[in-house]
Image 1: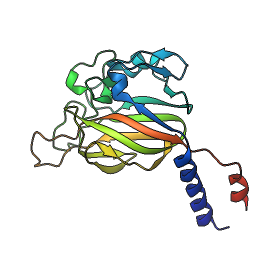
Image 2 (image 1 turned 180 degrees about the vertical axis):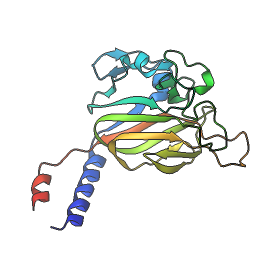
Image 3 (image 1 turned 90 degrees about the horizontal axis):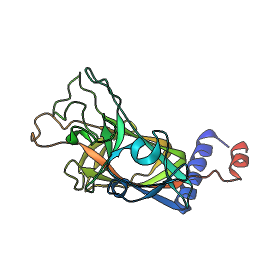
Image 4 (image 1 turned 135 degrees about the vertical axis):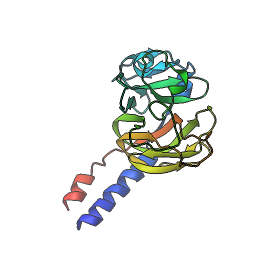
Length: 225
């Protein structure tokens, strides 16, 4: 069997298996608004507005979807001149979701709790400016079927972001993603120079729906053939 056909069959089997598996939806907006959930240590946590470690029970502790066994950890990254504090995934209440902040506990200033530019979301893509990245890391390979995004004003997000390095357009707050993997990076993109100065691509992840991608028992034999 040639390498191309082998890879194609493997990808097709993975996606087919994922589409038939039990879906898990992680509703970060509901968590930020106070909905209880189970973490990956099987401890029930009370939701609320704060950084990931405070709400979930530790920076490396995940939110667990009990029926599927899928868990996810959120983290923030990005550095810039004059910024010394580490960045965290941050739950913002008011029907927003998961963003990034540089302060533990309560985000200060409050307008820096989305995924944006460190030090402000200017329209110009300055060479010295570094943009925040929100990373979701799953405990297994998953197929991402849908992602909901909230805008800076907590309504449906329409704009452009980077997902795993690729520019991606979001319309009406929803993306039928069709992505497979374990780690997904969501990065802010500045709006084009000359755009209305009130425009921004700052965003939150409101919710994400995934399914496990199991390896069929017959797949190793198929690949060996």
